[in-house]
Image 1: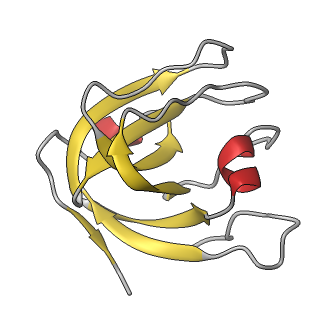
Image 2: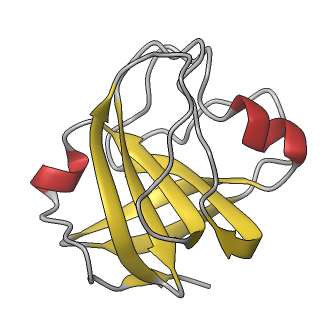
Image 3: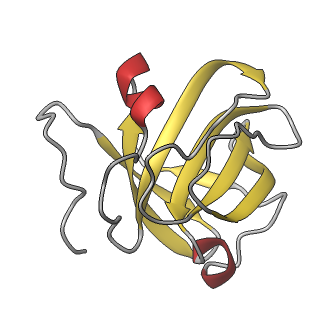
Length: 128
């Protein structure tokens, strides 16, 4: 399975999710600080790993790529269905969002949407 994402926070939680034709290990951004920092400042993200952001309300949540060292793919999720995808996002200061309301966002290494054949309308299965 490989090495889990390195994090200085020993309370970091992970969750497995089936998306497209792969299973990913997702670090859960479950605090305001983790949501604000995301993957910023990290040197890389191991293959088949990512970050999951969950929100109490369904709307157009904004993201930005401040202090990012690598490109990401974004999967915008509503009710455990892919409602939008944004591929190969590079570092930048301009906020952006999906084109559909969403209650979850998954960040993966750039290229994973294509490699896993993830499409709008796909189900996302979160392991318990």
